[in-house]
Amino acid sequence: MRAHKHFRSLGLALAAVLAAGPAHAGPPFRTDDPEPVEYQHWEIYGFSTGTHFQGDTNGVLPGLEVNYGAAPNLQLHLVAPLAFDRPSGSGTQYGYGDTELGVKYRFIEEDGKGWRPQIGVFPLIEVPTGDRQRGLGSGHTRAFIPIWLQKSFDEWTTYGGGGYWINPGAGNKDYWFFGWLLQRKVTEQLTLGGEIFHQTATTVSAPSSTGFNLGGIYDITENHHILFSAGRGIQHASETNEFSYYLAYQYTF
Image 1 (cartoon, rainbow, N blue to C red):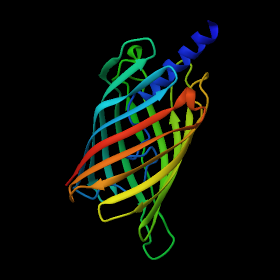
Image 2: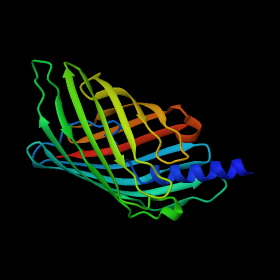
Image 3: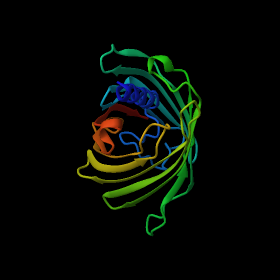
């Protein structure tokens, strides 16, 4: 009985972190890139994401992500999610989650003929607009301070990096996230890729986690796109990520 209560408290703590929305995500992957939206252009996503582990299923359905190229090499970022949380043996909770705000800035541009990658920063702030008691938010303002690198070679692109999460709250721990991705343009419309990522423990009772995702982007037209990925944990999967997915429609202009 004591072990069951301990596991239940661990599940709720993880749900509070994961249900806040697609934090540390570069659609359709968790690993991000340093490339901002072009100046005076927009990216708008309608998306759903979810994670299942033993004792809980949570995510976003639907969510809205908006990115705008406010200046050369500078992108403004907003995520507004409707979150859900379904602990085992309980009903589904549903409501507005934590709001994510960010600014992406690329300070080194890629050398197309050489080996120099593009490099950028993408600090994020999560505003605790979700209800923590219902598993729909973290209950505290959180911040992520990462650095990302990217290099392309013909039809191949690879990017990755990581950063530090400031994660206040009783029982919480600040933690690191790292990820790397490799993708290839298979046809004029389809790009496929895979990532591997690692995250240190987010609470005093939670384990660190390592996982992977496979996914891609399908360009319906120049302005309309479908993004998708799915994966799972390969370290402590039952406690953190037995299965996860991301699915989105993206409009660019």
